[in-house]
Image 1: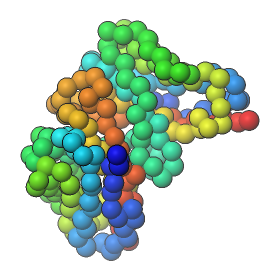
Image 2: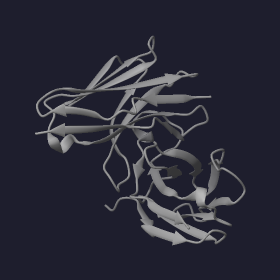
Image 3: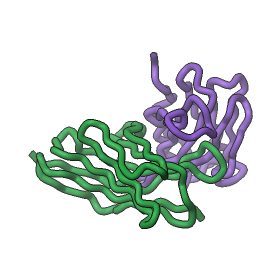
Image 4: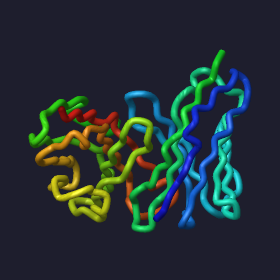
Length: 112
Length: 118
């Protein structure tokens, strides 16, 4: 079955460093991947979408890559700030239309 | 305008009871989704509506779960004979269109309803 996996271990980094989160997918070829941010007690918030024919996409301090050979997407936050602390979710559309398949999320903690 | 709203924010019920969870999507969004999220996990798809009809209900775990969207706007997720294993956060999301790719499938999530079955 279609599966998306993220590193379930929390990532702890120092303010100002670059955070890199990994998303791997198996058993299908998604047309795009999405990244969401989720804060405690809130719903996920859309950040970025990258299509399969795009190698890289940027938005302010965020950068996402999509490697269809490795079946992997990397999500980078440069010059990280404590306010970036949250859980980041990778998601892709399932084969049957609009539903999203999510990874389990990676919790990021940025220390001042 | 307003985002996706969900009521109640918290619901505590006893095993065996019936519950209804409500979702009010963003105005004009034709697609509406229900997901369930357990602690430490990502959202898990339950059902997706395109307009009034359920386009994909493959994620509903069993026939105790049912959802409606009679006028193509507000949706209600109904759970009969609740079990302790149903305890989770139930998230609703909406988007402009359900099946197209790109930005139109960006999903806007509500804050969720935390369901606790005792």
